[in-house]
Image (cartoon, rainbow, N blue to C red; front, side, top):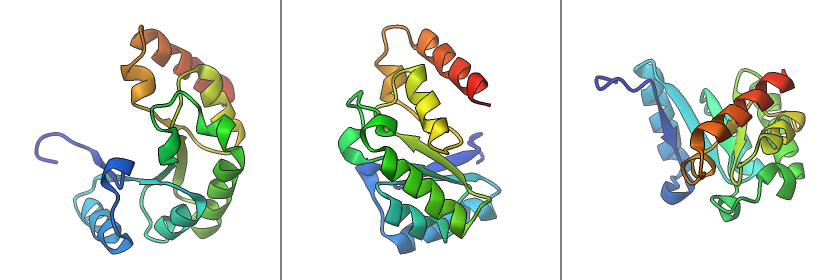
Length: 145
């Protein structure tokens, strides 16, 4: 926070944590007035994490991260189940999905499945023209609202 951060990414696939550790970190981020984004790998874990009341839950099946195969197309049923379970437990939580998101159409599909956005990294970082990709994502978001 002192360095200017406004939030933190918790439980990404490269650094998966136990639920009790996620709970402690979410609590600490709340204490410092920071945004907590907890990554999950499936609907059941998403539901368990939702009970901890983070600000954001982002479904990211690890096998799709960095592949260019969007979760919104490869596993749409997991996305909709995650949204359903998280909203049932705590409708205040923002639900995102990530993994394989590289095109505006992937963002549009994620919105149609009920998410409120996407979590991306390699889809932008590895792009030949990152600005173009971001603009495509922004247009997809605007058109989805």
